[in-house]
Amino acid sequence: MAWQDKIAIQLYSVRKEMERDLEGTLKKISALGVRYVQLDGMRGNDPERVASALRKYNLKMIGMHIKHERFSNDLDGIIREAYLFDCKTIYDKYIEEEDQHTAGYVKTKQTLIDAALKLAPLGFRIGLHNPEYDFTVLVEGRMLMDYITDPVSGISIYAEPDTYWISASNVDPVEYVKRYSGRAPIIHMKDFLPGFEITDMAHNLTEIGSGTVDFKAIIEWGNEHGVEYYCIEQDQSKLDMFDSLAQSLTALKPYF
Image (cartoon, rainbow, N blue to C red; front, side, top):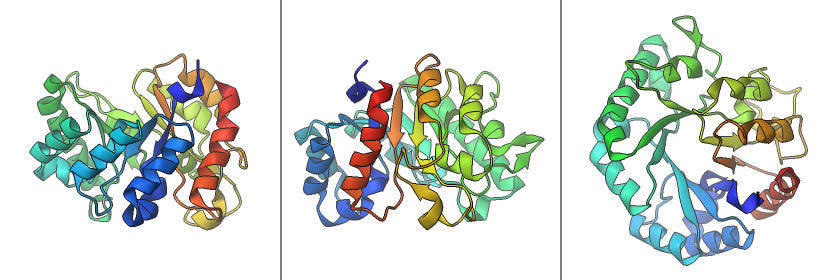
């Protein structure tokens, strides 16, 4: 198995670069040797232009992060974007602060189930990106991600585990992802340094290979249990972002 077939880059990593120079950014991503990316907004660019630039640099979309409220009020817009980018794997990117309470989580789950009921017949997969600070909150006795992805009448929301946020919540990411066999087509790969506050990303987020996450074990499990892509996401870095991504790629390549 070639690493190029399994590793993707989450474009949130280069959001600032995309705002300044869309084509130059995607050209540099392609030059890293990756074939797959995950979208997180247009960053001020016209969607048609983004789609065109992706084609130009032979980058294929494997997942899309969608703003929370759009699942309630813009399913038609989501469908249009999905067809534009030839990608039907979509995730609620972040449960907004105003919904970070029990009633909000219950509403979020119902909204995503309703979206899945409407979009699954068109071939869509609806998922939730790993919650952040509220990851370990209990809803009806279940951790939040487990609650959201528990099936309802045969409909299940897909999980998108994030190794950084799992680790920051003092949960073992290797053991945690195992509950999502066949239900986590994409895993976010981010390394973690313990010893800092959960909100101190400037210190506890580091390049892959520099922290404590056992990526080898995650990949070995994932390859046997339905993980399609391992998506590098670097929210911030002390390095040039392309150097940061290159370093993380170098650390992951030997596991394929």
